[in-house]
Length: 494
Image 1 (tube, rainbow, N blue to C red):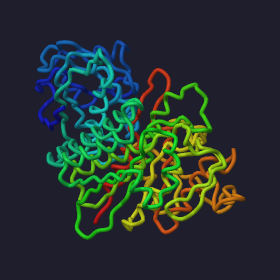
Image 2: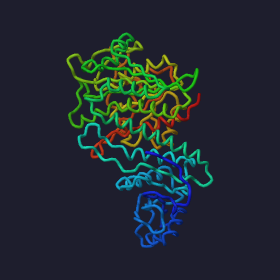
Image 3: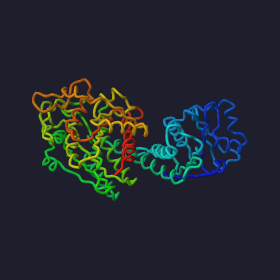
Image 4: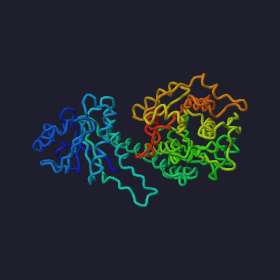
């Protein structure tokens, strides 16, 4: 997709479809007024008839309007002008792109110069348009013999805000496109089946990514190397599978002599639950249990493409959790890289077992911030559904920043308590710590487990079990929380 800034009066813009806003009660935006005047009042005739009232989400398509260069005009309801928030703007953009995606329209022009997003900076709409446009063209075709047809759109242009610097808007379009592509990349990795997207596949993808971007390097540790490091917890998860575990380390060097930010992703490429076998219903969705890893790899891609002037390291703990003859059993005790012993009371609480060794490994980089991302607990789904990423942290400043990034990117996170009172739920009679804390407060006790391995770090945990994929008719990976992570990384300085 190509993006550009295009000035000029909207009635003179040549495009397959031009989009203008109609506000609540049929109030025409400035661009709609200009098109209305040039076309013999074709828009006001529609609003006066009551066919379009300007409510958010409404659309009306006008074909071959007289006096207009564009082949089509799409009227988009924007709701109340004073309530045109970022959230409402995204709803409008998604609706418009859904409508235009069904047209044979190769070029779109969004005449939105007069639209003011009430709670964002002036360039935000440009970035979000490019991000949503990229999202709208994603189709999963990797394992289909009959391919899903992508929209015909090849070019998207935007009218800049009045008096704005063109260069700033062009930069915003590039940022939005990069984030949109990164989100799509995370979706693609998540959607691949478990017999293709194995730990070794993620390792190869990471190496290929590093080959394409000069600022990235990728290192992959095999099971023998992990064993020498003492990663008994991570290796216990992979013990029942023929697929070997991998620890993937992707480094972005954008600054000299600066401590890195580190992202750690859970990469369980398929999760049967191991000996603590999951119910059969919807088990196919456990291919999405590596979406934390996908978000880390995709975010590293976005960081490299934007050439962010910071150092970032992405670590992926990749394994397959299977009930083989050598699989870890409930009651087994394993020794983590940190030296702490863990009683495995439930082999389906495997994500924290791979993460704890990856988090310990991350310490060698002396991270400025350490964030893990994981589809960790069903309790997070029960608490937040699909709307919010669960956030827990040992650093309130880091947690606050991540919540701000979530709000700004509309990839929201909400903080849960990480209080000392919950830690005793992980007590074990036979090891230093148990890997589950009982049926209550599951998201919190999972984070308490991870906190035992991050005591010296500025650490945050994002449980994306509810947000990483959709079920039902719209089944598929969402690419979250790449938007939040990219917002966070773009705020960092050397």
